[in-house]
Length: 434
Image (cartoon, rainbow, N blue to C red; front, side):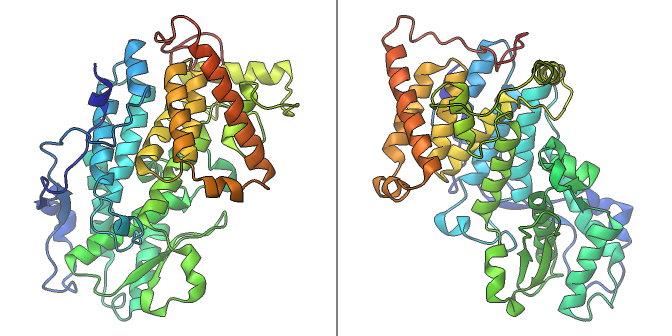
C-alpha cells in the first residue's frame, strides 16, 4: 500500500456548497417550535460540503508512518485512513485569513465535522472496530442541540441581545447539563473528543467552546442571530465559554478570542499531551521526556520509580491493549503519533516535526525519524533559535536534537537500515512496555 494513499486533500475549486435538509427537520421536535420564531426563519438545514470525490494529496503529503506501520503489523487502518482524509478535506479550506478568523464567525470550515474526524481516526486506532465512528450521526446530535433550543425559545429571550445570549447559556449549561471537566480530569480521553462530550455532556473548555460556536452558527444560518457575537474562552480551570455582543467587547477580551487555527491546535496538543508515551517524567517539555527515555539528555531526570509504580503502569498498559480506556501513565503511542501527524498538517510550529521524529525513533522507525529530524532542522528559523538561546529548556532541547541526529546517522551506517521493525513495542501488542 502506498504511503501517499493515506492522505487526501479537498480542492476548494472542485467542491460545492450544498444545503442538505437534516433528518431532524421531519421530527416532532422541529414541529414544536413556538410561533414566536421569525416567519422568515428557514427550516432545519445543515451546511454540508459535497464529499463525493476527494482528490489525492498534493505537495503537502508528508509520507507519514503511522498507518503503514500498523498495516504492517496486521492491523486494518481503512477507517483511520478515511477519517484522516476527511480531516484533510476540512483543513485544506483554511486560508491564512480563515486561520485567524474567530470560531464564532468561521464559515468555511465545519469545526464540528473536523473534530469528529479526529475522534473517528483515534477510535479506529484503538478499537479496531469493523464499523467506523458514525460521524454524521454525531453531527445530527450536535444539530439537535440547536433544534432543542427552538422549543425553549420565547419572546422574553428575544427582548434584548443580552437576554438572548443568556438564554442560550442557560439552555446549554443548565437545561442540557453540559459542564466543564475538572482540572484533574483534563487528561481523561472522553473530555477531549467531541463525540464523547456530546454523549456524556462533560468536556474541556475547548470542546464546550466548539459546541457553543456551532450552535451560534446554526442560529445565524436560520436567521435567529442577526448581530455579531464573540465567544469568551476562559483560561482558568473552571470558567465556562460564554457568548457576548461583539459591539460591547473590551480590549481585555482580546486574549480570550479563540481563532480556528488556535482551537484546532489546542485540541490536538491536548490529545498529544494526554497520550504522550512518557508520562512518568515531570519535565514540562514533551520532547525532553522522550529524550530522557532515549538517553539523549545528560544527567539524572528525576524519574526513578518504585517497582510497584512500574508494575502498576505495566498493568494499565495491558488494560489499554484490551480496549479499556484508563488513565495510563505510559500513554498511547498510536494516538500520540496521530496527533503529531495532524499537527504537522496544520503547520503550526516546526517543533511538531521534531516531536514526531523522536516518537518514530522510539518505534524503531529510524529512517523516518532521521527524515523528519532533517525537516525540522530545515524548517526552524535561525533567528528564532538565537532568540531562545538563553532559555535553559530550549538549550537542553537543541542539545538533545543534536545527540539524536548523531545517533540516527550512526544507525544509518548499520546494515538493514531500510527494514524498520514495524510495530515494535508501541504499535503492536507486545507483552513488554517500552
